[in-house]
Length: 354
Ligand SMILES: *Cc1c(COP(=O)(O)O)cnc(C)c1O
Image (cartoon, rainbow, N blue to C red; front, side, top):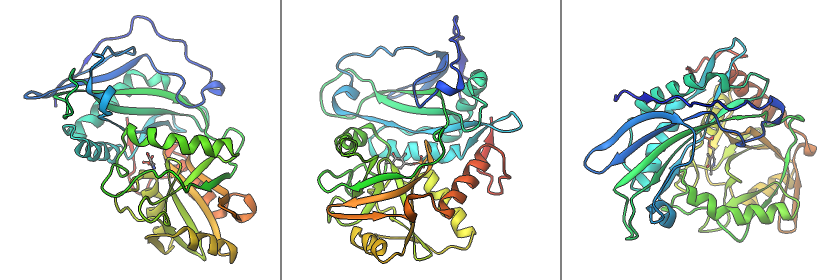
């Protein structure tokens, strides 16, 4: 592992008050950078003052979107220490994303160590108020100055940090979603199973239309049959139908969420039958109409768990659990956040001390 260098910032920013944090609005004093050069590999890991990145206007990322990213969090536990949640899983997934976009892989264990070092430098930025955390955004961009369509010969990896507020300052309110029947997010063979900026660019229009019609998010259907449920917004989606847990299988167009996997691990341990399989919108709405759709929720790092209270599909409308958060959804939220913030023991060894 190459030793990293640290260049301290001359001027430190004023830290925002915990109640104004929101999501991704404030950034810490430093960032992590590392370069890749063909023939030399990844090199020069360094912590430098946070600031703009200069790139040639012809850099590959601007034209062909060769970019991948991750999203994770550091938590200030009740005892005051700082913990990460399953960080190796995030860097493993970053490498899967790299493979798909022809970006050279990184050493996952080294990245965890560099990240810990960065967070130690920024320890004062990890907020302590209930529900707050330090959001971590690693990303890689293709930097070669060349317009020919090819994988870049040079890359920049960066990790930036943002203190974020409680996702639910007014308590957890279930969201209203509608089934998107025009745009699709991903198809098997495409990039749906990796975290790349291009997926998000292509999903913005559906999100805007949903908001304009009074919904929080869209429920994505598969791109081939336009029948099977895949994700909700940029979260995985899980359902409790007639006592069983059903979630779309990871068949190549669904992002393998770490929160999703953690939910499934907990649910299996609690004795639930978990089915990872194709779930048609027809089956889902029929279950709702028969009173068998008991709970529905999205899962992802930012919100952890986001209950779904209402769904619209064309003319069909479903209200889930009278629009209130379900008992199991609440228990998952309490257990996961309990482990993350150190209020509960961590029998799975998911958290890592910084
Ligand atoms: C990041 C992401 C998720 C959730 O993944 P987590 O690891 O749980 O944060 C789900 N769907 C999409 C499309 C995503 O980009």
